[in-house]
Amino acid sequence: MRISWINTRGGLKKMGNSDGLHHISKRKRVKKLLQDYPHPKFWVRLLDRFLIIVAFVGPMMMIPQLWQIYFYKSAGDIAVLSWLTLAALNIPWMMYGIVHKERPIVLAYFLWFLVNMSVAVGALIY
Image (cartoon, rainbow, N blue to C red; front, side, top):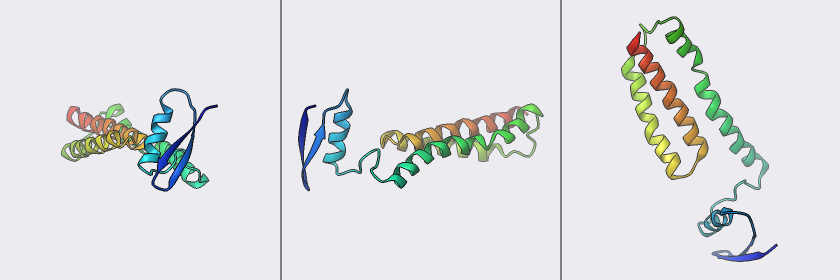
């Protein structure tokens, strides 16, 4: 295994050899003095993983609303403008997640966008 050393503000940091472009990401993290990923602390790693689950579970809680709209064809009390606004507000969050390479944010707000648009479209149809 080849070892390389990166000069940081705090001194030299040892970097191991890895496959693919992973080493570039490590170098960027060291140069910008970002936290390691996965984080060395158990609780931070747990939070990182938990957010992926939250990104799925939150939008899935809207399934009863979607079921009510599409199965029973009932959307009389749905405010279309509110749901369209919520969908539009998801777009900047998705862009933020993409720019900052934060997968949980991109995933969560993409799913919320789909859910919000589905409710809005259902309200327009029914």
